[in-house]
Amino acid sequence: MTSSNLQLRVAIVGAGPAGVYAGNILANSVKELGGEVAIDLFESLPAPYGLIRYGVAPDHPRIKGIVNSLHEMLGEGTIRFIGNVEVGRDIELAELHERYDAVIIATGAIRDAALDIPGIGLPGSYGAADFVAWYDGHPDVPREWPLDQREVAVIGNGNVALDVARVLAKHAVDLRPTEIADNILAGLEASAVTDVHVFGRRGPADIKFTPIELRELGEVPNVDIVVHDEDFVDADPAKAANNQLKVMLRVLGSWRDRESTGASRRLHLHFYHAPIEVLGEGRVEGLRFERTEPVGDGSVRGTGEIREIAVQQVYRAVGYYGTPVVGAPFDEGRGVVPNIEGRVQDAEGSAVPGLFATGWIKRGPVGLIGHTKSDAMETIAHLVADATSGALPAPTVDGDVLDLLAERDVAFTTWDGWLALDAHERALGADHEHTRERVKVVPRDEQVEVSRAGSLTLS
Image (cartoon, rainbow, N blue to C red; front, side, top):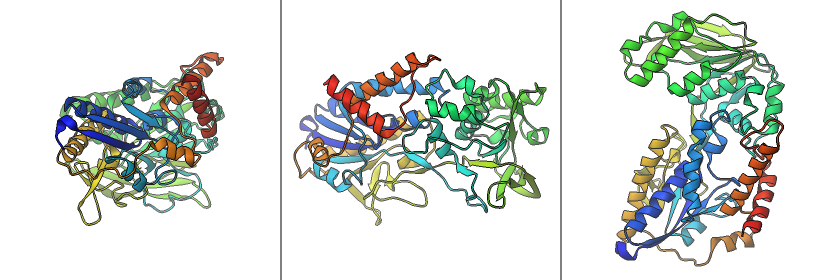
């Protein structure tokens, strides 16, 4: 097949940034070659945007600005959004292969990575991803969260750990202007939390935060930041590996000189603490750590000094774990779809014809949006190369996949439906006593109802 008569049908599974970027890059790549491509973007949730909608804290409007560019890409009409459809439940991966030249897996990572220490399964011990999903109004998590304890711990030194700690420590009144759902706001208003402890295994010079996250932490109203001089033995800004780290070390250093304001809540940052056990009889009562020290090459070693701290809840923010697709190869150890530069590999290490991966499910849950774009470019380059060389298996079934979903009574949602839901949430925000950009609709059935009714109206 030559590039000038390239005709493709491609399915993408996952409508977060990875899936949307892949679709946009694919559409532009095929257009530049003079060919044509029809792209269907499948999403298990009724609404698009993945972790941008359900994994970014509601008080991060600047990060959520990414939605604007994703909206523009989907709004161009070259990618067809099909929401509330789970591959492996509503339609099988094999059925997608029958209808499309290629399938791209872009499901990302929404589950918590494991922390294998004694007591981690005690009541009162939670995964950070579950808490994030709750405060972001994910439709498939409980509507209430038990914020009934005073002292809580967050294990991790990345941006997710800071997000979780900030939301736990922040007063609900300061979240009212955001898009936070009403049930979440009510839960945070009733919170008993007074002290949030964040623990990192390494020191300040090896934190995985970004400067913007760290600065925001220090600007939370009526919350005192507490740091400890003993943790700054290897935290000289002048020796920082880059300017970003230099800025963060200066920010942390400035907090050492802060005096207590007598705030009603405190956020404690602890470094050089490796968790070894969650303590408690019947539920979380504390954490046991081994104090660590820097080795000099960026790693740390245990000192043998054991410390304990009383907390009644623990949140592990030690990373995410990939979301597999039923019928696709999956590496349980790494939590990714096995692949070489985006070409999915089977158990024998051979490329699966017509199956590709991009984003976190391809490379693991690390990196920012820029990495997601470069991931998609690499994957799409291989897909287009396989298409032009005739290596993609041709579809064997004609007809619109929407007809198949309708026959199965799958209540799928569309782009017009998302526009209706988006407008509905914005209207709820405008009508609220505390005017907001939007108020999220949380229940899945309500999202689907608004989307499908609005889709009919718009069409």
